[in-house]
Picture: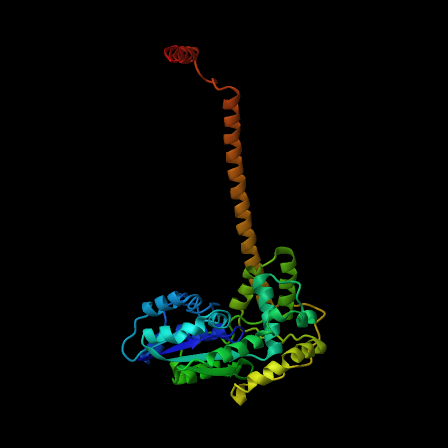
Length: 369
């Protein structure tokens, strides 16, 4: 029998960085008997790439879970490893947990090890807000009204409680919970400990930050861009985060009264959930005084170069599209004019003799019929 390792997220807990570490060190992991499962990110060797792991749709159905396990044939004594924060979503919003152990046992897994990261609620809410601005074109949610939008990320604690309650019925599942807010500077140590491996197995590591937060200037620019274009992070935020990953922005925080409003809603649930979490990694009250918003927005030379290149390339692409469209329109216009001319005079260009032959042929056919 074998072990099935599932790193399940949840979102905004260093998932992209952990996935990059696992993906880059899959050969080393294999030497220790842990196979990084074949999946969506298998061919991606960019250490700084923002991916969703190798298990994006692993639990979309019982049949799909079976098919993915079947694709990853193991040798005796080997374990299989999947990673995706979407697993958390399937575990909380579908019946995936109901068939988890049954299917795993069918393919030889008698032990299931889950690694689950949580994060203190205020800082996670701000991080999710920034992510929505970067990826989804959000422009109507701000630090000042964050307490009015639980869907932006601070209500995930209710899903965490739901997950923990559902996992209680699983007999062969071992859950390891870590608080990203506490251990973000030693994520790989936590992952190695979970896999029961020495840390030096992970000799290849990406940059310190993947999918970093935006600086206030970047955030405001993207927010303003979203108001005009909608989702547009692919040619502004994404290039900045991927090409300048080591920029460490100041933490953005909502006003104190907004933070207190969020904490008040969550407090009782957090107290219940904390009883099921190792004391060192329990949720903490992370209400902090925010830094003042800068009056002047600034970009470094490197930021300007990345922004100019990315936006410039997008403009070049659009210009080429416009030129191609003009050429197509011109061709269609010429064809349309020629067609109109033929319709006005269907006998245009036809000799008298040919015309007489067509008329005679018409009357001959009419008479015989």
